Length: 110
Image 1: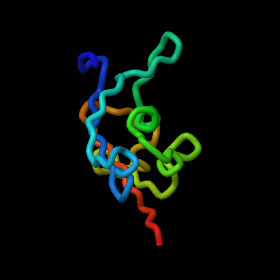
Image 2: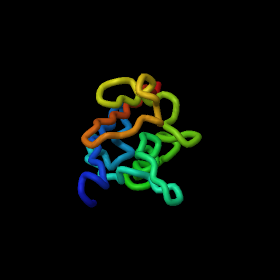
Image 3: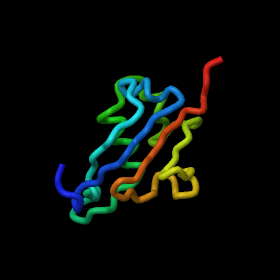
Image 4: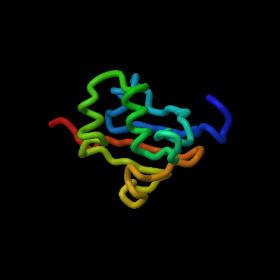
């Protein structure tokens, strides 16, 4: 993509079996725009945008195991820079260059 003013590099990791949905690859570096265009004004890119970007560009199968109702499905722990995303504002967290976002499935078959 373009320079760091117009794009962000985000470190994304999957665990607990989620990596199987993403080409069996645990770690990814994702380049995304720093702002989301909404009409003429842009808004800073947030985790909600990242989730949709991952679904549209990296997810290889079974979307329903990753997303439900426009966000990650229940049972997926999301960490932003090693902190539970609930403490960071969940999907509204504004991403910064080189942030790390981890998705871990806590659901196990029985």
